[in-house]
Length: 104
Image (cartoon, rainbow, N blue to C red; front, side):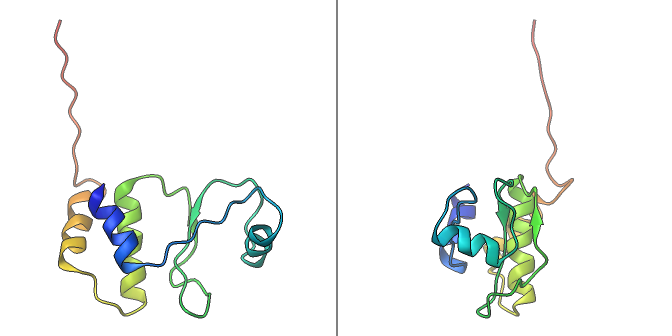
């Protein structure tokens, strides 16, 4: 998780907009056409406030978020740091296997 946090802090300007309050955050939510009380959505915007990659909700897994970070950097024609590319490969769907062991 620390590398994911580092990517968010070092490579992006992160902003949280609550979707269930009035005032400025409500205005921002409406500007981007987001419904109130929806599930969290991660968007990657350019300096023109337009989506760099397509909006997608339901991104709950760490690997999916890392993949979208890399896709956004590539779409913006920015370099994806080697450590983030490695993390993308390591967390790609199907790259991580889970095993469950039990003893009685």
